[in-house]
Image (tube, rainbow, N blue to C red; front, top):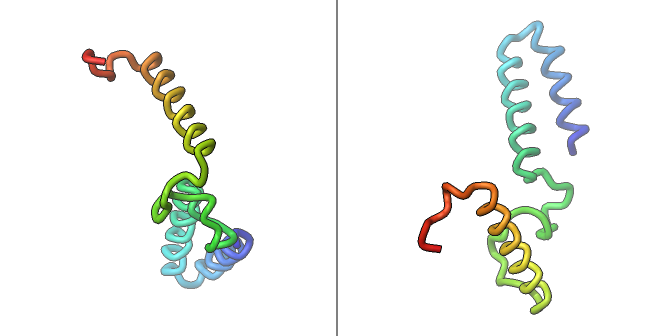
Length: 92
C-alpha cells in the first residue's frame, strides 16, 4: 500500500511541473501519509482489529489479559508520577 502511495506521489511531482495544481494534491497526499503513519492507522488488512483503537471491543478475552493490562497501566502511572510530580494531585 505504501509503495503505491509513494509511486503516486512521485507521479504527481513529475506531472506538477506542467500543472501546479498537482503540487497541492501531492502535498495533501504527503500530509495524509505522514498523519496516518503517526497514528498507526495505515494497515495492510482493514479487517485486522488487533492494531489501532479499542473502539468496538467488548473487553479483555481472559483474566490474564485484563491483569496484564492493569499492571502495565499501574506501572505507567507510577512512572508518570515520578517524572511529573507537579502535575499529580496532592490528595493522592
